[in-house]
Length: 300
Image 1: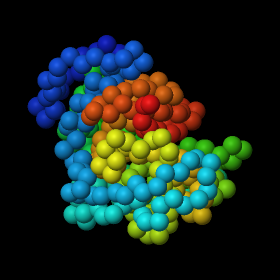
Image 2: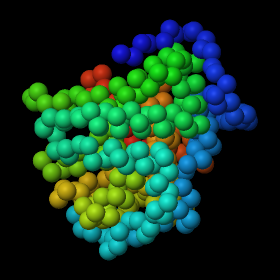
Image 3: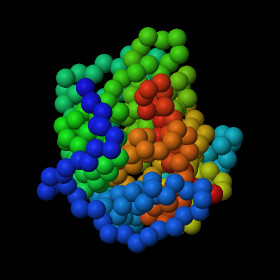
Image 4: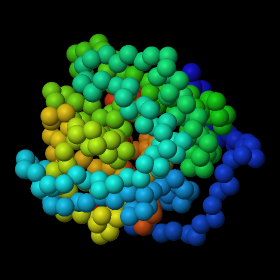
C-alpha cells in the first residue's frame, strides 16, 4: 500500500533525479493557477519524447461540426500518418501494450491477469526512467503529496491509474479504472465515455473502429493541423462521442505526469493553466476516492 508522505517534510533526492530547469518569472491572469502553470510548463519543456507535427505525424482536421450534429463533416481519417518508428519508443510501446487489456462496456467486471499486472508495472517502470516523470515525482514529494521513495511512488501511481473500482451504479462489478477511462475509453449503452488519448484514437482509427466526424466549431486552434490539442467528434464501437478533447503528439509520460500532478495538486473540476504557449483547462473528476476522468480543452 502507498504510505502518505509527511506534509512539510523535506525529501532527499538521489543523483539520478532531474535538476530543476531555470525559468524566468512568469505572470498569469488571475483566473490561472500559477503554480500548476509553472510546473506544467517545465514538464512541457522536459518532454523530449513529444512528436513533431509534419515530421513524426500529420493530422487533417477538415470540416467543423457541433456537438448536437450527427453528420460526418470529415470524409477522411483524422490521422494522415504516424511514423511507425516513433511507436517503437519504449514508453509508447509499453503504453500500447496496455490498450487491449480492457472490456469497453461498463457493468462487466474487468479481469486482470498476472501478465497484465506485469504490463502495468512495466509501463510505470518505463515512464519513471524519463525526465518528465522524475520531475513529477520530485515536485509531488516536495509538496508532501507522495513519498520521496521511488518504490512507494510507483505503488501510488499504480493505485491512481490501475486500481479497479465500480463505475456503474447498482452494479457490484469492478468495471473501471482511471487508465481505462482516460486513455482507453469505455462505453455505456454503446455511448463512448472518456477516450482522451491520441495514440488510442490513431490505433482504433487504423483498425476501422473509429470514424472521425470533424472538429468542434469554435475550437480550431490557431496552429490548425500542427496543433497539440484538439476537440473533435467521432464514432467508436457504433456509438457517438459528441465532443471529446485530447492532446496530440504528446508522450505517454507527459500525459500521465500532467494528469497525476493536477489530480494530486489541483482542484476537482476545471484548472486553468498556461504552458507551451497554450492556455488550457485541465478538468479532473473524481469517482469516490478514485480518479474518475481527466481531459484537456482550450481555454477561451
